[in-house]
Structures are given as C-alpha cells and as structure tokens.
Image 1: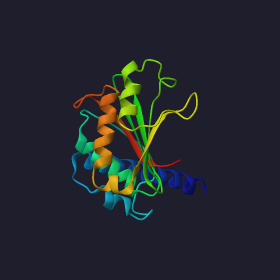
Image 2: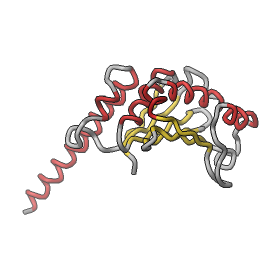
Image 3: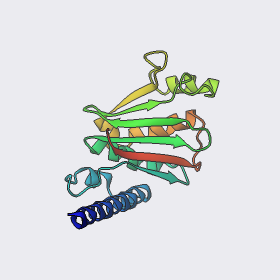
Image 4: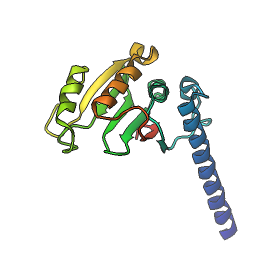
Amino acid sequence: MGAEQAEGRKQRRANRTARLTTLSVLLACIAVGAVSPAALAQATPGESCGEKLTNQLRRFNEKCLADLVAYVGGAPKGTARIVNEAEKYWIKLAHTDEGVRAEGVSKAEYPLMKPDTEAGLKALGWQPPENEFGSFWRVFGGSEVGNGKAAEELAKALRAYGIAPGEAISITAGPQD
C-alpha cells in the first residue's frame, strides 16, 4: 500500500511538472507569435494546462498585447494581469460574454499613481472607479478584440500609466479562479 501511494505521488508530481512546462512553452509561443491564441482557446480540457503562469517579458510591445488580448477573448474563462516591473502598475483582463473587461489600478489602490494618469485614462474612454477602492475599467466588445482595436487601446492605457514600449512587464495568464 505504501509503495502504491509513493508511486501515485511521484506520478502526480511528474504530471504537474509536465503541465507547467507545457504552459511555459505555450505562453512563450504566444509572446513571440508562434502559436495562435484562438487555437489554444479551442483546446479541450484534457489537452490544455489549467494552471496560471507568470512570465516576465523583457519588452512591452503591442504584438504581445494583441496575442494576450486574443487569448483572453478566445478562452471562455481566460484572464490575464499585466504588471509594470518598475512601478507595479497593473491592468487585469477577463473574458466576459461581451468580450474582454479590463481593469486598471486607481489612485486608491496605488497612491503613487501620477496625477495626469487619471485624466489620461478618462480621455481614452476608461470609466472611473465605481466606489472608493475600485479600479478604472473598460469593456472591449468581441469585434474590438477580434480586429485588434482592444490591444491598441490597451497599449494606450499602459502608456497613460507611464509604461513605455520596451520596458519590462510581467504577465500572469490563465483561467479565472
């Protein structure tokens, strides 16, 4: 009985390592454009990895954002979080029935936010927080996700936060909790 339990633990550990390795490779492929996020979103549960992955990318670029938005928009429970490594600003993305909902850090959540960031986000069509400790938010429709407009607008929002192209960002992507 003890040998069977040890073998079971060993097999689970090997499966977990294989899933994490596969997910790392898939996210890297998305980042460089080698794999279609739409194809990943259509994978059946037995074929895909179900755990979240954090990956630090060396450069913020619009191609990476386009792939990430396409992944979140195409995955029924897709989510992602983009964090500026230098200042820790973040934007969260979540798949919705309408397309993709984006939420960005507010002054209440990040007191060091620059004064012009709030005005910049509002000028880009982002809604202010709905309560004292809420986030800025914006919903991108399915057509905006599909035609790349959502990724363009997301890049503008990241620039409003002060994240310049080429800066280091971290991305956490995976299914909703």
